Length: 405
Image 1 (tube, rainbow, N blue to C red):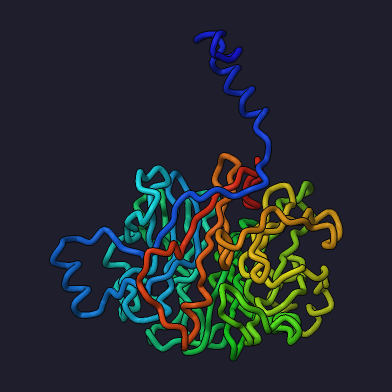
Image 2: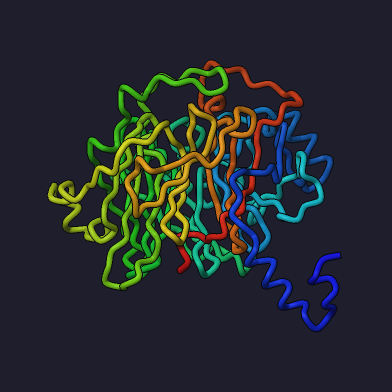
C-alpha cells in the first residue's frame, strides 16, 4: 500500500495532484484501437445486407485518414478512395469496451454521409476542432471521379449534435472541382478565424487560406510545395512509391507570448525531406498573396530524415511528425535547429504509414497508422484478412494542442 493510500479521504485531491506531477512523458506509443477492417453501426440488419449486396459497402475498400479527439470521442475521416465506402466522417467513444474492430458511428448522421448529394459530405480527408467545439471539415478529395460536387469547408457545432453552422464552397480556381485534393488543415482563431489547408493536387498543388469572417479563400503556389526527386523513391510495407507527391503535411506554431507576434505555418511535400515555414501574418494578407512578394517570406527550415505525411504542433513548440520510410515518429523543438530532432519511437509493425495526429486535454498524443499508400495505389489488390491494418496509438507527452496556451 502506498503513502497516498494511507492518507485517506482528506488527502485525495493532494494525492491526485502529486500523481499528475510525477507522471513523465512517454517515449513510446501504445495501441489504443486497431482494425482489420472497418464496419459501422448500421440502422438495421436489412440495411447492412442491402449495402453489401449492392456494393455500397465493400469492407476491404474502407480506409481511415484523419483523426481528431474531442470530449471523449475520436472523430475519424474516411476518404472515399475506392468504391464501397458508405461513410466518410464517423466517430468512436474513446472509452469503447472493444479495442479490436470497434464499430464506427456515422457523424453527424447517415444522411450527412450520402454520396452524390452535394449538401452532404462527399469525400472527407481531414478536419480540425477549435477551442469552441467547432469542427472544421474539409470535404475536398476530388481526384478520383467519385463525385461531381465542388469541394467545400463545413463547420459543425459538436456541442449541438453536429449541427451545420456554415458551408463554404471552394472556388474552382482555388481547388479544382475535378483534380483538387484538400488534404490537411490547421485552424488559426485570430482575426475572425482562419484555416490553412494543403491542396495535395498533382495538377495544382498549393496552400489554401480560408477566412471565416470574410468567407473568402485564396491560394498560394510555390516551388517549395512540389515533391523532390531525391525523396520520391521509397517503400513502405513492401509497396514502392515513385511519384512526386506534393505538399501534404501542415502545422501551426503555438500561440505567441506577445499578441503582436505572428505564428509560423510549417509545411512539407510528402515526397520530400525539406521542411518550410511562412508567417501566418503573410498568409492572412490576401492582397500580398496576390503578388509574388510573399515568396520572399518563405523560410527553409531544414531537412528531415524521412518523408512525412501528417504533422502536429503542441502548445510548447514541439513538432511531431511521421517518418514514413523509417517506420517511426520524430519530435523537434522548434526553438532549436531541425538537426536536433530526435526519434520518439520506431517500430515496423506499429508505424506502417504514420499519418494523422491529435491531442486530447490530458496530455496525450494520438496517432493514426493506416497503410494508406495501399489504398491510393491503382495496382494494389485489397483483401480482407485478420491483419490489423489501422491502428490508433497513444503516447503521453504532458502537453496540449497548438490551439491552447
